[in-house]
Length: 409
Image 1 (tube, one colour):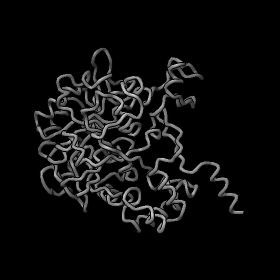
Image 2 (image 1 turned 90 degrees about the vertical axis):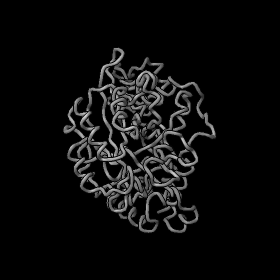
Image 3 (image 1 turned 135 degrees about the vertical axis):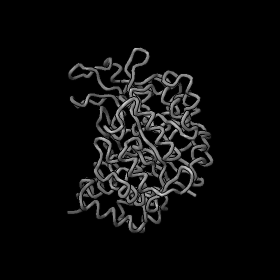
């Protein structure tokens, strides 16, 4: 069967998340999006743990169900610790096969930080030591470094990360099988580093609201089985791991370098020429993902192999409709059009990925169908994100918009 999985989401108990990030709203959003397997997120939080335990129904080892959506128990933790003369801030994902294992993990982790304070708890715990602790509880767990290029909290990030995975995990590197690319990078950028070749690249939404579920996701051709899915990830099985769904990485909020307070966005060559200083105020800029990739890579842009798991760049349907209608993405007009389209195609994933071009063009307004096809062909214009500001994406250029306006008169 085809499994569309988003393993990294958050609950209402995480900071800066929607109050609707509960099991009912997560399940409804997943169905609309076309996701059939979700990570629970936040299993370290005691209240969320209880809600999950009370609501999720056991399906099979490591898999739980709720209102037609399957779940895997997952959590993201923030490891903040001192190593090699620097403070490190690394986010890691944890997958666990059952509530008994999660209970033991939580009991062990609460020694290093408050699990009540946030759905994504801060732990004063070396990432390497955490791997040892978790795998000593269950070898069926898997630990995956999250959004590895993010400047402030990514393993390879410019601010508090490392220059290699080996620096971070040392002898425990053999127990790290996968990496999360994050919104500001896609697999092609990671393929430029030969030292990442052995790791499976996964993509997830890191959603803080139901609307953002599956903005990045993973598509498998396999049984809905915890052990099989973990093995697919561990073995980098490109026969069963079909592809990942990706943001256009330029749209991520840390793609380029820059200084948000001064409104300055810089490509890596520009910031290097300025010694990484803001041209307006002279302070250090936030070095983004593209800069770090250029610095650490040993391959040219465009490198690929047949053995690599492919990917598709997508733009959420609401954003496509919003541009076509030239109105805010959260407007009632966009929401009504979105619901109408979902009513015809059953899920957003069907619209963006599965539906044939002729089906789209015969069922949708011309410009919406054209927008979807342009996104599939990667025919978009993007102003890159930087220093916490999301990039801005355009499917239709200004000339087309002016011509359309003139045609109305």
